Image 1 (cartoon, chains in turn red, brown):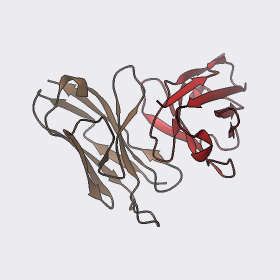
Image 2 (image 1 turned 120 degrees about the horizontal axis):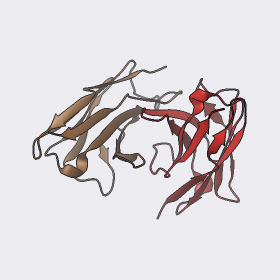
Image 3 (image 1 turned 90 degrees about the horizontal axis):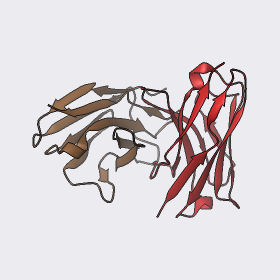
Image 4 (image 1 turned 180 degrees about the vertical axis):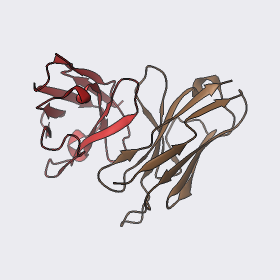
Length: 115
Length: 112
């Protein structure tokens, strides 16, 4: 069965960096695009980024453009989100989801930006 | 950006009664490939979101048939024919037709 397991969350100071990972299994990872979506505490869902199956095209929400970078390693079945220049408003649970239509979601990893 | 507007914000429902959630987009969600990329997600308390419906009306495997999606263009609806206790949670619509992808604000379904 499809499994998406996020990791790498934690507490970081404003201006700091963090790299999230999403380990995928149960489907042909290298054949599908992947998304990152976040949810601030008590708030709704916000799409963050998408990367095509081969990594050639990447798309970002305006709120993270220039600060976050999505990447993937198809040999390791792993998706990444490098987050730089973090702000308090980036505090959220970060989910990865597979395929264009968000077939499956991981359990999420919490990122807290606070001094 | 495409703005997704859901209503109502909160929906108290009696067990066994129907429920309906509206989702309107600020632009047509018909893609140049002919598909309409409108999804519905359910998020139960303390859980990750789960997709219920994709491309307006295609129900996911394992989703009870009391859930149905309909609509076209800019106007979409999620219906629950007979609400059960396990349906409590927040429901989100989302458009995948145009970047940036956008979600509706969510509708909280609760039991009266």
